[in-house]
Length: 183
Image 1 (cartoon, rainbow, N blue to C red):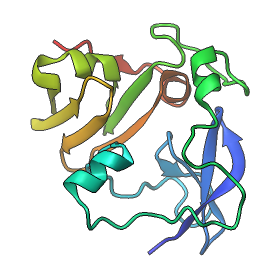
Image 2: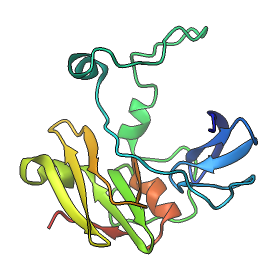
Image 3: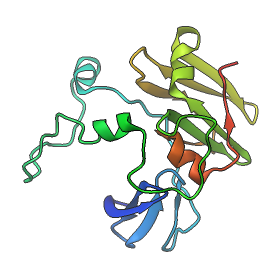
């Protein structure tokens, strides 16, 4: 079992995590360890859902959550990066820029062996009933989104890696990505 923390380092304008056991760095968007004994390896990816706290309280009132009592004087109810995401320019550069999508476009990035795809969140929202089906190595991938852009990974083929991120970070680390257009 590994316990992770925020390293404070960036790679391709995306924060690197570190595992406390080995002080090894892990790329969230690259989906692999980039140093230490697990370099080049990935963790097993699980289905996930992005949901606001109020909705979680309604659907799973017994869910465990992290405490806001951190010892730091910080307003955890607001997003400190909201203006940054709206602005569209990067604070820190990336090595490659792919202009097929706006750089701050939220996407779900998927990698399964030689298949590397980006699913724009808006494409998932616009899919019939907000459910986008796709095939990955003869297995079904199912992504869902509601009108506000909250995304769920409902079905995930075995060995598939998936991350919710922005186009600029994904495309810098995964050049040549296919963009799924919802068809």
